Amino acid sequence: MGRRSDVCRGDRPAVDAMTYLDDLASEIERRIPRDLVPEVTSALLFRLYALLALVKGTAVTASDVHNAWAVWMREQDPDHRSIKPFEELDVEMQAFDDPFVLAIRVVAESRI
Image (cartoon, one colour):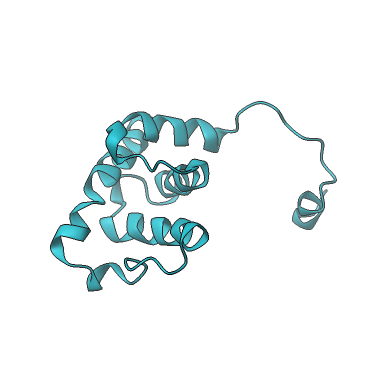
């Protein structure tokens, strides 16, 4: 049996096809209004949202979504003013996560 560390070293051949995470990520992204999708490369962000769909399913919260976004944003703009705990954001900023929560829940529900 292979070890997980083997994959990190690149011992497995590259796969050109989309993975199940990419499929979920695409489903989630399609449910987001275009004006809310980041203009910069967002593949990792939507893969993180796909992970939330798998591990949290319909129980995903706005705080979960914000935490995934914060991980992604840390790579994009490490000094972004909204990289802080969800509870410290004002109500208007918290509301930005709502469409993503809904999209993740819808995709998770469709997978049950």
